[in-house]
Length: 126
Image (cartoon, one colour):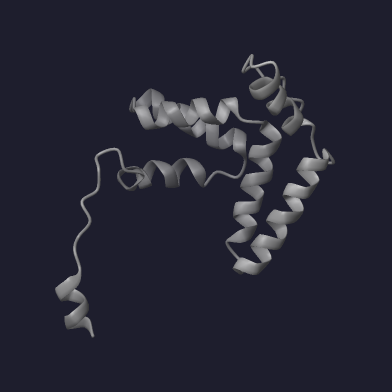
């Protein structure tokens, strides 16, 4: 089986911008415990080694709802130890609570800023 697989296996040609080339930075920064620590670590990386990927990531995280970032980080961390079924159940529950506004009103605020007023300036209330 190995001989057959080896005969048809090709080494992928990764693009220069591939996240694969940044795994060391990703591991250093995203292994932090809290969202604030992750952003701080990315800021440190950006000052030491300017990189478009890091800058774009920082901007995206700073634009996102702080509550959503924290919810997502916790979900990802818990999901590492769960099966797909458990992850999907948790995801469904999270989305249900976020849509109802039980946890935060940030979804409504994000929709207002992007879809209704189109000012692209959400006022998060973490």
